[in-house]
Image (cartoon, rainbow, N blue to C red; front, side, top):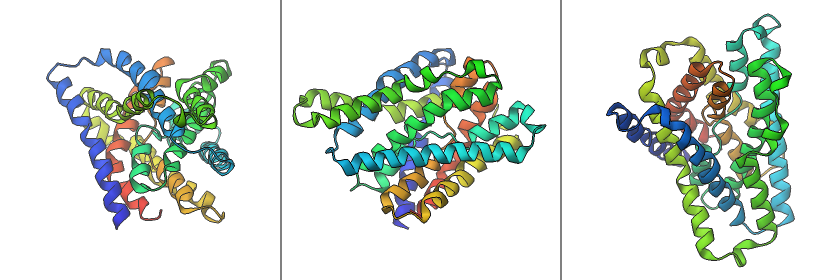
Length: 310
């Protein structure tokens, strides 16, 4: 019950961050067309600080990096397996339908950084490595998003960008963080810089949710709540995928923080990267936005319930 209360409170707080964006957009103080610039600030500045500060604050050890590598493998395996399983279950004809392909990737790729990290931090306050697991999960997600995700969305191999998958802000931040951690930067890096990275990182979740709030204000709410496919994708992402992640590690001799982090991060709402990819390729923007918004709202119930398994 403690885990339910802790996660419910933290998820509720994140959902409340939606309100400023929603009401400011309705009051015409924020224009949706400005979101692209705000998103750049989020992805290139705030996210960099979030992942960098999470990793550099830890003491380097072979055990830590071994766990990070193992978590990367489990998160990557879980996402790929879920996508392939859904594509196989659909059959050849249904795979030609863009909406079905969206279902396969949206059910696996989640907002494990901006949304997932605060939850695992709250659930495991004495285990700082939980935040690092979020960074590692996000790295595998970005690599898949720009490769498998793009191919799934477009059905065309020419849009696959391994360079974008490996050289995006999230992956670069994790790599930089690992290097600084190995160099024991927290012992020699001036406190003003460490505080600066931490402050930028703490802005990530509120800013991400404010952006979603603005998007929510522009949506047709009736359509958002009455589209069966959006509910199906949300169920896949919020229930089926996290349980699949939990089953994947259940029989391995791993510590509770490792298993619980994979479960909770797997339960994060649909990833915002899907909306970005849909915008880039001009296909499925409305569906991607609806999935992100509905799954985020429903996570207020699903994540606290799943946390009771952690």
